[in-house]
Image (tube, rainbow, N blue to C red; front, side, top):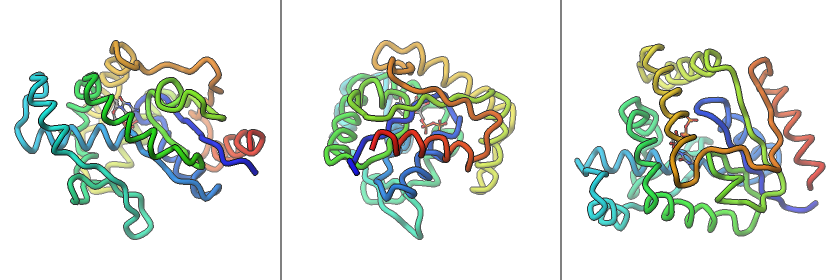
Length: 222
Ligand code: CDP
C-alpha cells in the first residue's frame, strides 16, 4: 500500500485532533498537531513578555524557539526548548493569544517549513487550518471537518475539564468563535476548505463513526 499524507482542516475544536490521532494510530502513521506549534510559539511570547506586534522581537524569538514532539506515556506531547508544555499550551491564556500570533507571516513561514520537513517521507496525518491548502497541497486525502458551535463548545469544555483545566463555558464559546473569525479572515493562509477536500460534519457522529468514514476514504487513496 502507498504511504500517503492525510490533511485535516477545520474550525476550532471540531474534533480534528481526535480524528487525526485515531487515523494515525490505525494506519501506524505519524501525527502532526500543527496547532500545538502555534500554541508553543504563543506560550514562548507570553512567558518571556515579548510584544509580538514588534517584528524585531518576533524575529529574535523565532531564533530561540525549538519545538518538537515526543511520546510520553503513550501520549503525543509538545516540547518547547526541551520542556514538555503539552498541558500549558491548552490553557485559556494561550487560546486567547494564539490566533493573533498565527496571523504573523514570519511565524507561519517558520512553522510551515518545519511541518513540511516532518511530512517529507509521507505516512503522516496532520491537522490544522492550512494543511490542505498551504502545508501539504499535494496531500492524497484532504478532510474538512465541521460541527455545530454549541457541540464544539461542549466538547472543548469536557476536554479541558478532563485535563484538569478550569474554564467557563461562555468564555470557551467566545474564544472558539473569535478564533474562527480571525483564522478565516487573516491575509496569510486563511482557514479555507481546499477545492479537493471532502467535508465531514461530525455534529451527530460518534468518534468511531467519523473514524470509520475517514479510514474508508484513506484506504481508497492508499
Ligand atoms: O484545537 P483547536 O481546534 O481549538 O485549535 P488548534 O488546532 O490547537 O490551533 C490553535 C490556533 O492555531 C488556531 O486557532 C489558529 O489560529 C492557529 N493555527 C493556524 O493558524 N494554522 C494551523 N495549521 C494550525 C493552527
